[in-house]
Amino acid sequence: MNAQELRELGPEKLQVKLGEFRKELMNLRFQHATAQLENSQRIPLVKKSIARILTILKAKDMETGDE
Image (cartoon, rainbow, N blue to C red; front, side, top):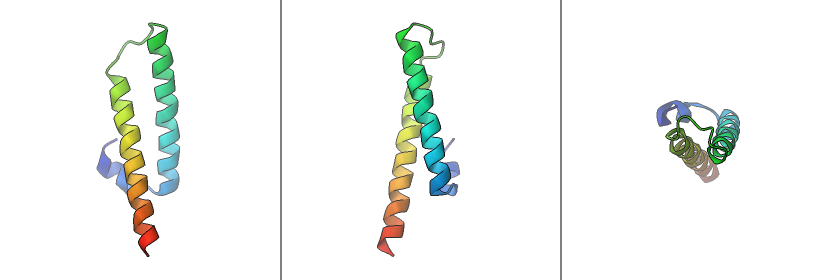
């Protein structure tokens, strides 16, 4: 998902997506450790997605905190 699609989601859905990406990252790391990972480029993409979601959540939190 790109940043624009993520910004359109509400905080609850972003939390769900965050959990999904963290679970996927754990599975990718496990596959990497057991030499079963086919696409090693997926790990940095998932990490970036997690960081993107956390950034958007923080920005939304700051917007609502100012009011």
